Image 1 (cartoon, rainbow, N blue to C red):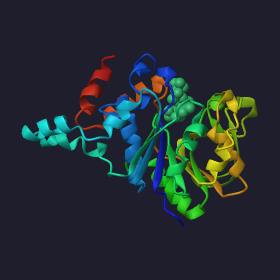
Image 2: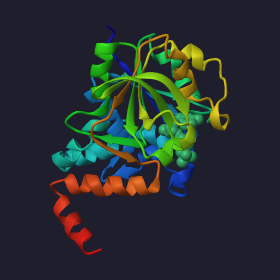
Image 3: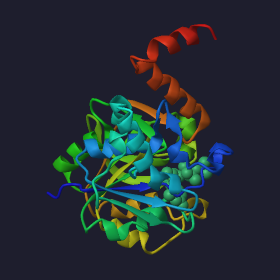
Image 4: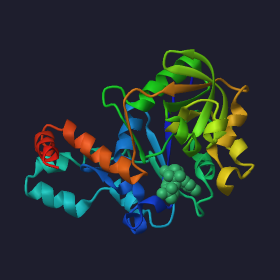
Length: 288
Ligand code: UTP
């Protein structure tokens, strides 16, 4: 069984739901408490034992490259002032040299196209895809780790899912379910953004995927799907029945940080968990 070594982070979207904030700052750089969204996703990949991080970027996303670089002047100044505790906060931004790549998606043609842009980096092995604007929070048992364990047992492809309200199925890729074993559901089909009346279940894909390399050839046909975009869901649907395909129901908190309400909730929720901030925020919330 080949271990998952590469994670792809598609970060080339326009982030229109977050304008004007995302006019000059990538959505993935928006902070939840004091860490940008992209750092939470990278930490999750590292916790699943992944070594190589591939970011699919677009215009205006340079802040992400700078973020994962050494900020020499800043770090030197902090060293000379003996601010070791502050320096320690930068630890997670240091990725292993040679194990970080940035590839451009010149036009935002869809998530499937963004993943395909990273095809030369996956070494013909299974790989992970993480959408950083979905903050899946379970520090004890991170989502991708839960999925990697299932992938080791079942082989093939594994996607993370959550049950969403019936009336929201038209916002997600929805699973047509087969056999269910606890948190693991066999995937018999996938439908992109079905109307509630047409949805085969309420199990929605929530931005974490472990995929087999064969998907790249399917994405390479560049067929357009829902919304005129090259959809990852359409290519995944073609692997069902050809390779094992399972959905892992994520156990933990999900915050949709591509959405304003979800983003604000994530900040409150994670701040409440922190020893340094929780008491102050809890007191404040009582007053509003
Ligand atoms: P979204 O559907 O959230 O789109 O993309 P978006 O552009 O980021 O945000 P809105 O809807 O305009 O506010 C889901 C993920 O796929 C990436 C995005 O960066 C995001 O992580 N993506 C999407 C790409 O990298 N390229 C694309 O062409 C489309």
